[in-house]
Each structure stands twice: as C-alpha cells, then as structure tokens.
Image 1 (tube, rainbow, N blue to C red):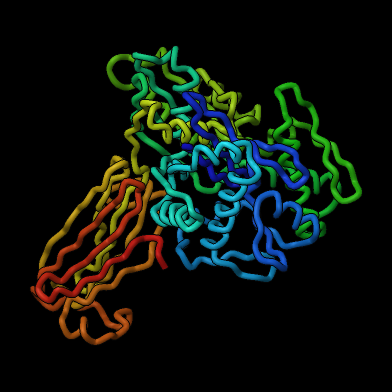
Image 2 (cartoon, rainbow, N blue to C red):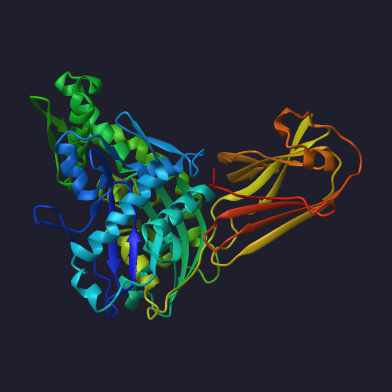
Length: 501
C-alpha cells in the first residue's frame, strides 16, 4: 500500500492510493469515533510520551502537553540536540517527532480504516512533505524522524507542490493535454507557503516558491482567543496554561465553522460567555493575511509570463486548513483581481497529492525547486572582513543529487566558514529570511591539524600560499546539504551535514 503523509502543525492527515483514487484515512479515537486526522499533539505521562488522541486524553487528566511542535523545526538553530519543554521536563525535539510518527504507524495498523487492508497489502514506501521554505536542518530532522519511527520514505515533496497534484487529478479533464499556470496558496496551521506551478497534462514544474515559517492558523487562533479574553476582562496569563490551551482549541473550532454569512463568534472564557463580532475578528487578523499576500505577490506576477499566453487559464488555488477562513479568498480577489479556487479538501489537499505521488501508476511527474539559496561567509584579509560566496542558487532543481566543488590554495592559518541559507540576494549579499548554521572551522596548517586545539581561540592570520584545499558541497534530492572540506596535501578532512548537532 502506498501512502502520502502530511505531518501538520495541528493535524496530521494521511491518504492512500486505491486503484486510481486517493481517499483520506480515518483514525479512531479512544471512544471509537472516526476522524480524518490525528492531532499533532504530544503529552508526558508517568508512562512516558504519548501522542495523538491519547495525548488529548492525557491533557484532560492534567498531563503537560506540547502542541504545534512542528513549529520548533523552523527555528534557525534547530538540530538533532534541540530540546523542547513538556511542563518542567526537557525532551529532545527529534524524540518527540519520532514518538509521534511511531504512534502514527501503530495507529495505521490497528485503529484506522486501512488497518484491515494492510494484512493483505503491506505498507510500502511513503511520500512525505515539508514546507516549501523549509531549510536543510528542518528537512533532515523530518526525514530522520520518519526513518527512526519505522517508515520507509520514497520521497519528500514541498507541500504546495503536492497540493498541485491534487488540483490536477481532481480537474484532470480540464487540464489534460493543456498548459496552465497556478499559484498554490498554502496556509496551514503553522506555516505559509506558495508556489508558482506550470502544468502540462500530468507534468508539473515549480517555477518559484516563497514561504513564511511562522504564519498559520495557530496565529489566527491566538488572535481570537485574546479578543475573547479582552471582552471577558481576563488576561491570558490569569487563565493559566491549561485553560488557555482549551480556549485556543475552542477558538480553532469556532474559526473553522465560520462561513461568509457568519456574524458573530461565541466563546466561553473561564465562567464568562463572550460574543465577538466576526467583523472585529477579521479586522484583527487582516494584517496576518496581508503578510501572506505581500509575500506571494512576485509569484502572482509570474502567472502571465511565458509563451503561450496563459493569462486566461491562470489562477490562485487555496489549500491548507487555515485558507478556509472566508477572509482569505476575499482579500486575495481584492488584491490581485484573479480567479480564486479553493480546494474542496483544503486540509487534506497535500496528503492527497502525496498519495498521488506515491502511486507508481499515477503518471505524475514533478520538477521542484529548492526555494532557498545556500552559501558561506568566509574570512578575508586576515579576518578583518567577510566575503560571501553563494554555493547553491534558490532555484536549484530538487529530485537528484547536485555537487559543487571549490579548490584553492589556502592563504590563512584557519578557515572560518559561516554557512547560511537565504531567501534572496541583493548586491551579492544574502537578505531577508536568513537561516545561519553552526560555524565550521578548518585548520589549514599541519601543526594545527595535529594540535587538537580549539580553533576558536586561534586568531585568523594571513600566512601566504599554503596547502591545496578542496571544498565539496552536496545537496541531495530532498534539499539536505552536506559539506566536506579536505586538505589535499595532508589528507586531513572534515564533513558536516547541516542539521546535525
């Protein structure tokens, strides 16, 4: 059986390939009710970490809970040793991810609608997703958690690229043998992504992607919960953590029930029932939507480019659970004057697209792009200034391994490499959303290579022409970068994969 798994900030959704159809998997909670998702939630109990519906029950019993832990992956400093707090206890983020995904694997076999089918059709490789704007460490940790949990991963796709597959499959009679161009607007629980996709029959090519790592439905829920607290005259801190978490859950449920005709939202804050005018809520969250609109504007400009003229068959496609907010399509139409189509399965669109990608008989192909550039600041002029060298362009095509090498004679005693991923370049310098990684220091002199000294304590000095140095950069098909620096004269070598502590 082939599966597509969309690990989301608030909900994780799975779809499977079934003879050309791609239904969403339903999971049973502990009361026997079916849900087309598993809550992305982890709790710490006396018996250890539990997740999903078991974590919901543990929270009700007073256990400390970690919600929206996918957001921690977007931190510029994240690595395999990153810790998160569960109450007063610190737990490795990688362990939290692995436990959640391991429990998901168990639930697929024992408490899902595909469980009985897996006896005769064992689980094969799965296709997973990350935000289009995910940096190298974020991609690595996601992939490693799936591996440690016991999944065999066939491919990792960018989330809006997978949603593009769902669009084409659902409307295949309209786009078959035609060219079209689409901006996929993906507003999920914790992240925003958008991709400009060119479609020809079942062949998809991503022409560009942007993203905001911390913008999603969680932020909309906080705005609504805080409005409710303000009307009730109760500060969020006065509620306490558990009651505020419950208010956030209630706010999420109320937000998801809004329709274009909704006029008011009713919430309970402590012992007070408050009524929030929908117009007031929309006014408060408009700046959040405007952030996404401003970020995606360059992609919308590209809808009309190219030959032939595609302006009549170009539009915006809304996916992600938070895109269901009626304010979102309204602002997009007002801003861009474009056709706005919303997936009938906004929360499940990515999972369905991943299942299509996992099905070897679907015939869909994708040329995707990195969406982030990668480069290094180097020491120059005896450490008195830094020079930036771009290694991989943000438009580098994913799906196959790429290698770049640099070879030169060292002129300093120590090489100090400050690696970053970036959104844009301006005047050959990275600007905008920049993700720094740990510095890599490399000794260019034989005595330093043998000394074992902490190179951070050694002043960078120009020493004249020295050994022949080779830098090898590899970006794998999933967008994960590794670096190998070798002194070709002595054989001394250092390898670092970004995302490892």
